[in-house]
Image (cartoon, rainbow, N blue to C red):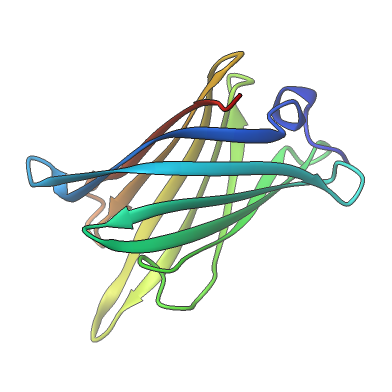
Length: 155
C-alpha cells in the first residue's frame, strides 16, 4: 500500500538545523546545519530520507526508510546514522498520528545493560516545514529529547 499523500508530497530537498541533545534538554546542545533529501521509492510504497549533519567538526550522515500499511495501520522504518548507530540498522514500528506525524520506535543494545529505546517522529509542520524529532528511552521508560532537526524546503 502507498504512503499517505501528505508524506509523499514531502519529496525534494530540505535544509535546516539539527540540534543534538547530549543529556536530554537539561544537558549540552550541539547545533549544526543539516540537509535532507526525501524521495519516493517502490511506487510510493516507501519514503527514503537521507540527511547530513556535523558533530563538532566531523561530518555525519543518516538514512531513514519509511513504510506504511493502510490495512493494519502499521508504520515501519529502518534507520541508520553514522554517529548514532555504529553501522547497525535499527528496525522500528509505529503509526501515523493525527495525519501529520509518522512515529516509530525501536531498540538498541547497550551491553552489558538492558536495551534502550529510540523513538523517531517525522512531523509535518506546514507546507514548507518539517521536523525530525528523536527521543532516547531508558530501560526504565524515561524519555529524553535526543535530536530535533527542523527543515524548510530548499529553493
